[in-house]
Each structure stands twice: as structure tokens, then as C-alpha cells.
Image (cartoon, rainbow, N blue to C red):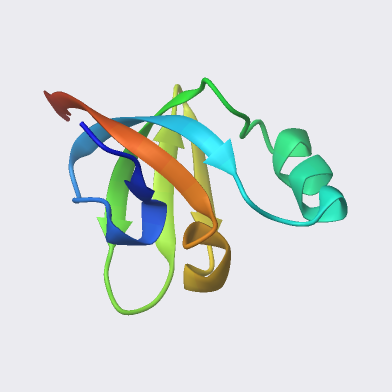
Length: 79
């Protein structure tokens, strides 16, 4: 499946991060939160406001602006 923006990812589905298209300082900040290329993440909520992700027992909330710069591919697995 083609890469899509995390902002457009379906709720309750598992994705793999394929690219992070932000400035280096933001990539470093995201890595500090545990988000990096190759990580499998679940999308818990993706509505008008923030995007809430799950990775193991960790929950991370991202703004839609940042989520738009993170590219993912679907793993075809629902949560």
C-alpha cells in the first residue's frame, strides 16, 4: 500500500512509519518521544483536533500539522 500522511490514517488501524518530513529539531523531538522510522503504531483517534497514537503502553498526541508530515503505510491490521 502507498505511503499516506498520518493525518489521513484511519482510526483503529495499525501503521508503520516510513518517513518523517520535518526539520531536524522536530525529528529529534519525535525520536525523544519514541517515534521514528520503522516503528509500528496504532491510531487511536484521528478527528478534527489532535491525532492520538499508541505504541505499546505509550500514548502520544500530535497536532494535525505534525501528523501531516509523518508518512505511514497500513499494515492491514485493526486494533
